[in-house]
Amino acid sequence: MCPREELNPYLSLRTGLLYPLSYEGNTNSKYHRADKRKVFCGIFTRWYNTYMVKTLLTKAIERVAPAVVSITTAPHSVPPERYALNNQSAPPSNESDLEATGGSGFVVSPDGLILTNKHVVSDELEYFVTLTDERKFEAHIIAKDPTGDLAIIRVEAKNLPTAPLGSAKHLSLGESVIAIGNAYGQFTNTASAGIVSGLSRSLMAQLDDAGNAEELFGLIQTDAAINPGNSGGPLINTEGEVVGINVAMIIGAQNLSFAVPIDIAKKDLDELKRFGRIRKPYLGIKYLPITEAVQKEFDLSSAHGILISSQNKKDPAIAPGGPADAAGLRKGDILLAVNGKKITQQEPFGAHLLRARVGSALILTVLRNNISEDITVRVAEWDSSKEKVL
Image (cartoon, rainbow, N blue to C red; front, side, top):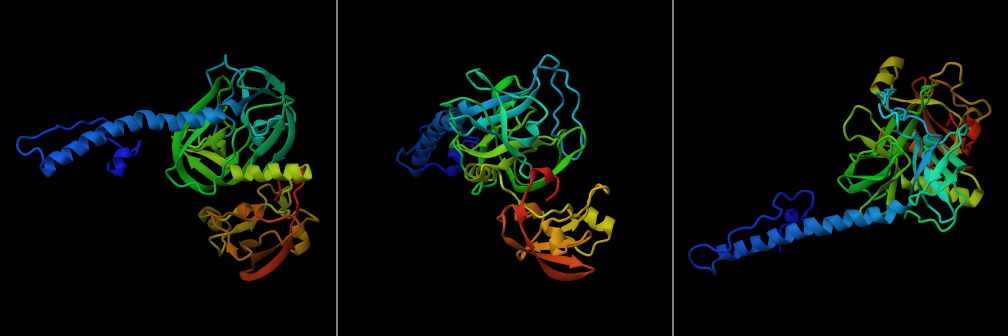
């Protein structure tokens, strides 16, 4: 049997190596038999890498690509990528002859339901969806989920090809993935292969030029290239199943891209089907994740959790009349755990909240004046008018 590393299409350095068929002396010796094995492994490895790997990747892309769409506004010069991290600005684009695009998306039902990013579509603008067969339809925004930066839109069409939805729950570091999208709104079905570089990533992302930011958590990190215009496109595995939705890249860095796990979108689709809207748990607080810098700035006694506080002094940290207000939470409280599970960078508060059911009770471990106590909060339903408050 050939060594596993010789069959690995990404690690093999011996592809196609052929060794001498014979040595002087006894051709039945164990050395000669070992040489024959090397000959077989060399030929088999070259065949495996040439045909099997190509088949895995191309079949995966072919399974999903027909469902990938381009989401565009009126034609104008391409702006810099708006979805930068840490308030960084993208360099100006010189491609003034390209069509600006809100991003990408993919069809999830034959009757025209499409998944994309929330930051790709705006209520103030009119958008069009272009299919792979170049048919163009007006897009209608059905629902938005700002906590996952997801949006569901619809086009008036029938019998559309759909993308199979998988799960990100069992992804492993090093697993092969492929990002598909319409780079710059012109290069349709651009595919880039990479691996899963990290799991359960959290970050603060700038959404627009106005400086609006949003916390994203539970993200898949990949080194597959996500270019401007790819936002909202699918991240797929080698089975041709969608495991994530491309959402962000760090401008100026190399191979640092992120995707929202598809499981969040599947829950949103289920909510839309059952209730006609996306129901999200809501507490009515604004907060800062406690980092080393936050702990030092506010002289906090805890190195983990979240600090109930508003970055904008004009906005209240506790929404008046909201669940947190009714439960007696206060500005300056530190939340350490939810239902006994510690709030950490790997398991941020938003991830805990999203697992809660609307109408259920959460037991929050609160640190106030260096005294820890448990406070029960009844989870309400998120209202789109309160989308900036959790």
